[in-house]
Length: 255
Image 1: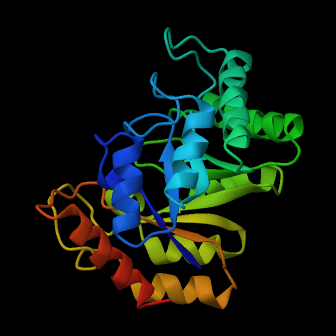
Image 2 (image 1 turned 135 degrees about the vertical axis):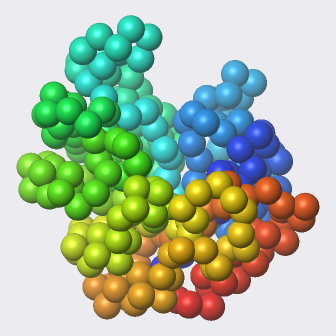
């Protein structure tokens, strides 16, 4: 398993600052977000080539890109329009391919039957259109994909190239049992986001609510050899590099 730096640790940092922090903290892999963080590869001051060059100069491997969600709706009007939504997401997928990766992370829409149907149809349509690509379907508190029953309704009905993204922080925020979730979908996990807090009060990484050893044991038992993205989403630190180093060392000691 490989450890990956998450810019959730520095959401206001632009790409050069985020890559510098990742390298100084000892990471050689990084994940990026299309939205939410200022290190986004669609920042108005950056081109795809500039992003690739920045990653190369920092000697960082991009592992995945968090893209727009399959909501089935237009973002500006909330009108139901799955084809429009899929055109946007397909653009994001081709951005990921231009950044030399073959996987992206997505989530669903509202907690409705309509959104469930659109999620299933949308994922299958995207994977049919872009054959050499995988999608990691991430859980999120309050999202169409939140807990075990949601995934049981989706995963049997989508292509095998759709994998489960386990976001431990959002499972904790939703009050769900992380270990049971991981055990249930262990054979189909494509990516793991590690955050150990239920709320936003900063605590040292590894001293929160996540049963790290038990979760990692399940992953080892099923032969998971993918990425572990180390998230410090709600942390406020006087020494951000030190916090990232401590988090990396803590997880590394367990795998």
